[in-house]
Image (tube, rainbow, N blue to C red; front, side):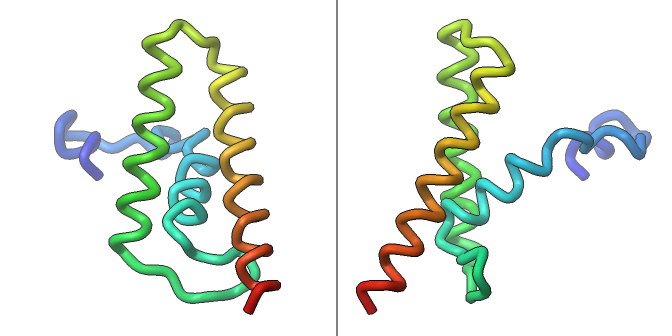
Length: 89
């Protein structure tokens, strides 16, 4: 939406590839993939963490492939921590 407002046009393929980032932001924000309740604040914090990670890797000159690998590792870690948290309860 922000990109469309800046360009004064919309493209149906602009968001292709952002699925992993969106899911990662929600999971890092605390929403369980196994059914649960998430918060807007948690999702915003998750998006901020993902943006900082992606920007930092980009500034270090890490290739796009390894950036996606790093995001995948963060998502797997968040799901694992959520599973551990549910087992403790």
